[in-house]
Image 1 (cartoon, helix red, strand yellow):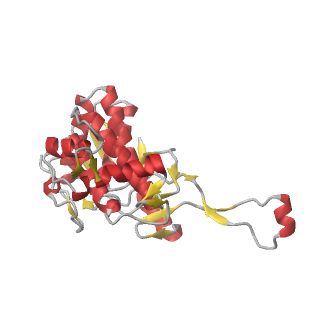
Image 2: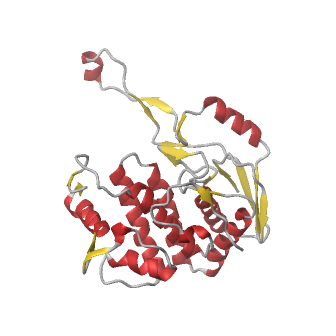
Image 3: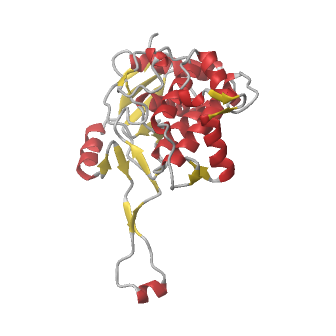
Length: 292
């Protein structure tokens, strides 16, 4: 099964499957570097001109707006091959999991990308794959799939999918909403219990021995800054205490919430990495350093 888009030429083999660049890898990359429109690690889809109505054509001399396509396809850069007759669903899960490790949204050939995609590894997770990380990380992801039932597989797929897709959104409140959905999804997978939304991050941090961000700590018996922000956004159409766009929270959710969810997904997958012990506000890009 072909997939992409990934500029990393690494080949590796795990128990049951192997990953390698496609034969035309160098040509695909040459075309990408020649034509792609990129910024800060993100590739933006092809541009299209919108269509003006008949009355607009009469009243306005200017051209119609140029926007990026909402859905677009990318050339495949890699192929995953099963050596144990894995199903297509199994391979699709491994592709998405590999994207989680790379910090990119990777899709099978023929699938659409949305709006913009990260093309630079580490863009969506701040962590670099190197040396044995490839095999150690993917072996963990494969074991999770093999040892899980269909419901848990689908739930984890949804969490990783939303974790990566949500970071492509332009606005802070959209990214916050996406990461909160990921948190709730991991909570459903975890088997832990909490008596309120505010208690869920606490229960998860205790289960996986993670350091709890300050914004997830309780300020009342059933409220934290995180749960308060979530309730305002979901139920009151506010963000940072005001209507959307008029204010922003003091907390750096785009970095720290993503980081917390990165740890939760990794821990749930069984990935043993020192990053799980990192401080919630850790800002420096580092390596996975995944243990076997």
